Image 1 (tube, each protein chain N blue to C red):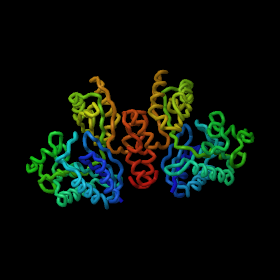
Image 2: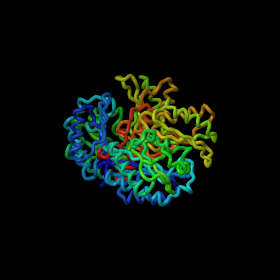
Image 3: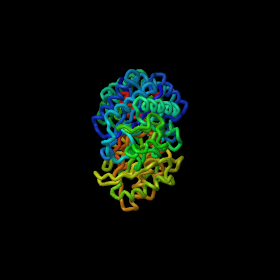
Image 4: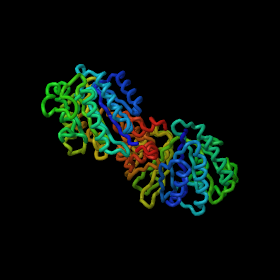
Length: 299
Length: 299
């Protein structure tokens, strides 16, 4: 039995909708693991796992419900987004392969496009056009649902699956990828331009490998959020990233107020970071739950 | 199905013996999780889990093999020890209760005493005499196998199970306890008396709750090892202990060379420590493997 993780990103922070989505996962035979909602971003990230027999139907049902429940015409939020179910990543776990994850993503892209009439862009390992590997080629701070509505007939935005027509559910990015960590560091300043100087350094690739960064003003809390995706947590341990931002922020006279893990961390990532700090040679293999799971063949 | 963890401590670092012991665990239907051997201590710690139907027989069989394979008359090592299978802790996991763990420890104590003729002292939550709760009331740096041989007929050393006669397998401490973390910090000095000043502070209870400490000279590596058992990893996070020892050592002109986790860490302990460091509110629930395991009902 091959297991896959998926981390769908929905353009809502409505608890009632999240409850409905959880129900779809559970009744479809999947395992709901976690959900994180953010009101400022008006966005929710659900983590689930399911085996290869069930994953396509569960994710299709989530896409269908998101289309029915979320109206992009009314959606406001900080995070860039093009659709109700905005990003749908498929991650191979344990013995599952990336090729299987790509196959699943294509089955999903095809069904979501043809049965739900939603334009689908394949990204990550599933990208059919090299530039689309990176989500930000299509969707970024300056090009979101509203812009896509005006430009969807242009060649650059031709969907991989589904019609070149944007309804109130918007469009969707679907793709296979490796495990990533979503990590936010909150800095006690409202000067986003200063934080953007740190963002640029992180993005430059000179200090870290496989880390993408963005800065958001979080007005409700009076700080600026440096929001990152860590694509290679082994090359770029969390504690190194934290230390780098801490010293950069201090150099500008700011402090880190807090940091946040969105979704789940593999045991490996935590031990690697803690291990560096306490000069200990530890890995996921030192974690009880990791070992128990490994011994039951679920890795 | 209720699961228990056990972390038997054997007075040997012989790989061939460890292989035999592993085989006993696996063929008995238990799950071998980890083993750590130390040549200077001449000691090995095995971590295993098994359900309530199998745990007693597996641990009894380990005790029987240790009696056959390890000769205390020939054993030399830094760590205090009174027997071949020196300490046999039973730890309740998931839905298992401490009462069940105590019951299992008594069944084991009785069988090891009567069938193997080994004197057994019940410790921890299973202690029948309040002073014996703490292992060091019976076994400590100054009172080991050799001393017990001379004093076993005294009232203080009367076994809870088995005869007051010491064979070459020595005696055994058996007891139920909560999860503990064995943590060593290695300091780059051969001046054990200086490190003992840190040990005293840690033991005083003024700085940390539920941490026991000892210092050993590790001549083969030229450093002093501050060896700890953390009985309450939630009250005394690893990173706080590390930081405390680091600043104490630096105050004496020394440095921490490395630190070591012996056996396994619960996901909770790692996230708690890392969370404090990166100012993030994370716990075991942020760990993928912990969540997967929880969802399968094994916690």
